[in-house]
Image (cartoon, rainbow, N blue to C red; front, side):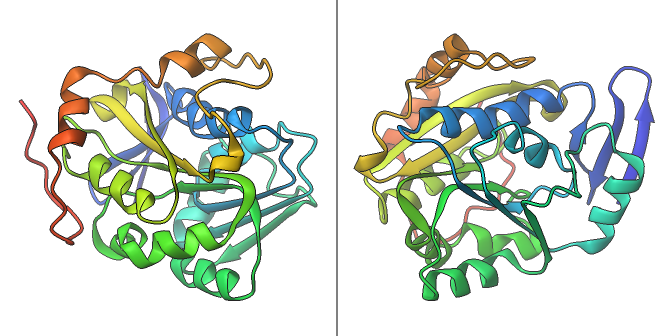
Length: 260
């Protein structure tokens, strides 16, 4: 773990040699991860589950919704969480929010137990690292099945799905995993300069959630707005080709070969 301060990008976090977050553009990622699924729903959000998100940026954006009564956040790495809380407070939300239940533990195990206990969430956000090391389990089909079991009738799940330019199989793989358990699955994008390109998000829901590509109320963030919400679902032709030509071999794709 490296926490740095850069003249252009401000403070940031590096894990395993990969930039995870910087002050300079984190607002794009966090606003798009939260507000697209939150405002694409037909009904107000009451409960949220966050897997990962040690930097607290997702929590910050989630806390903007007064309708939310319960937030559960499950983070595996206690040291990363402590480091971010100490050195990156400019990014994080309110860790003392009484609505928040912070759990240090395995996200996959929590979701499995929650599914068996019939716990339901209106919004489930997976702010995990790429499919490397311990995070691989969060990309496997059984995990997606448990996620679907934890989703309320009109709930939405969203997860970051890598940069197609460097991990071209990850986004279509995740899309397929969600389509195996939920009927309403859409891919959207956001530009992330420090990641080196456009990042993919996959959102999944039941049909009762409605058309998540259309915002149901207006919100204007530093990056997010209703027009950006709609436009984010317009995918480049080569992304569409990746989706159309994807063949699932059952293995979690771990590769960094570029598309071009």
